[in-house]
Amino acid sequence: MFDPFPATVAFAPLIIYLFVLAIIRIGGFTWVTTGGRDLAAVLAAVSGLVVIGPMELFFPNATASFLGAWVWIPLLLLYFLFACLMILGVRAKLITYGRTAEEVFPAMARAARSIDPAAAINNEQWQIHLPTQGVHLRLESSPGHDCVSVLAFEPTLTPSFWHSLQSKLRDELRATSPPRPRRGWALLSVACMMAYSLVRYVASEPALLVEGFREWIIR
Image (tube, rainbow, N blue to C red):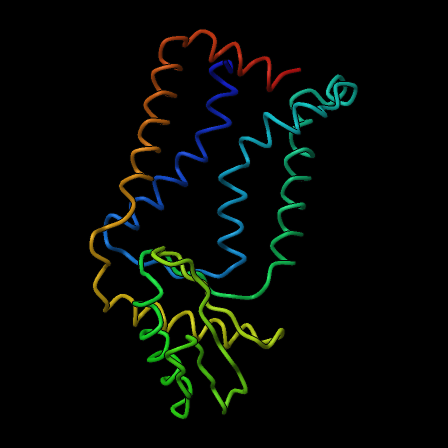
């Protein structure tokens, strides 16, 4: 079993991430974001696990003897740079939460036609061609899931196009009804159980929490 402080560092970001996703689904909200921002949220959620895992395993004790608590700055900066490298390399796309593919595609069609009135819609393959823009869009989703990706066949599209499509798709999805029954209850249950276990464990050993903080920060 982890000490209270490492357990808090490891699981607090993940619990917050799960709570946010559960609230979006249960509340009937919709969230449209870019692939890079979605990956950034995932990397932030697992950052605590990275701190108590790889960072602790390869902790530079010799450097810590000179820098003291300041040694965490280059370590966290290294993870930040690694995250930036992964985000810059991710494929350009939009990701929607809170609506299924069957609900996203009509909204995407309306958003595409507001950008290009000559847009051709393929309902069978969930593809949209914007001839004026020279863009082919498609949906990617698992059946029954309310997490849908909007991708383009073209590898290089301008950020202004993605920003315009994201804004219009967000407006169209806000006018749609949430799926029935609401999803997210299982995710909320997991997040609540994790949060309850963590709070109960930390509250039972407050002295170990303070001691763990001193041992981790001040080496």
